[in-house]
Structure formats: C-alpha cells, structure tokens
Amino acid sequence: MDMNADHDLVRGTHVAEVMSREPIVLHTDDSVEYAGVVLLREGISGAPVVDDRDTLVGVFSHSDVLARFPAPPMRRGHRSYIVAPDPE
Image (cartoon, rainbow, N blue to C red; front, side, top):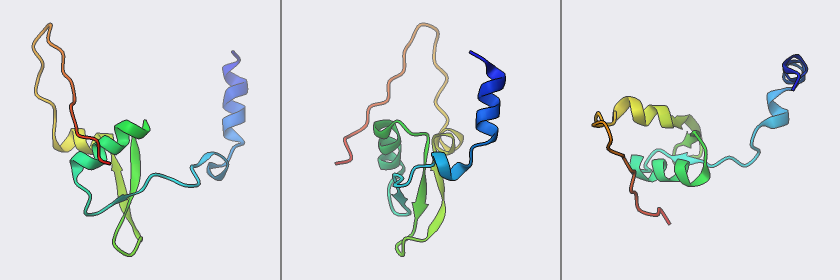
C-alpha cells in the first residue's frame, strides 16, 4: 500500500464528498443512556444534537461520555461489559 498515494487522495478530497447526507441525529432531551445505545447500535462515535426546532446545538460523542462518566478501574483478569436496553 502506497501511503503517499493515499495521502494525496485524501488531500484532494473535500468533506462534502465523504460526509453522511442523512446523519443519525440526537435531541437535547434524549437521555445519555439512549444516546450511548444509539452510538453503539449504529457503530458511530458521535452524532449532531438538535433542539426542539431542529437547530444544531452541538455534537454528542463517545468521548463526552467517557469524560463525564469515567469507567471504574478494572481489576486484573476481570472483564467489563456494557448492558443497555434497546432504545426502540
């Protein structure tokens, strides 16, 4: 794989050419639990957040959750699992 060729390809590409045209959107009154399940289910790391007038007010991301609700330290040899209800 030629890394220089890949870099040249990316350099000449605009965001509009690769962005999602119909993104998954969250709402300001969605719970963090629901938003987290949506990110996991859709395999995305973040989503735009809109208010009740569908105005963009921010972006919710996986790192926002980790920053606000850090996972407790794990003991050696233990595994951690996320169990969340289906938002549907």
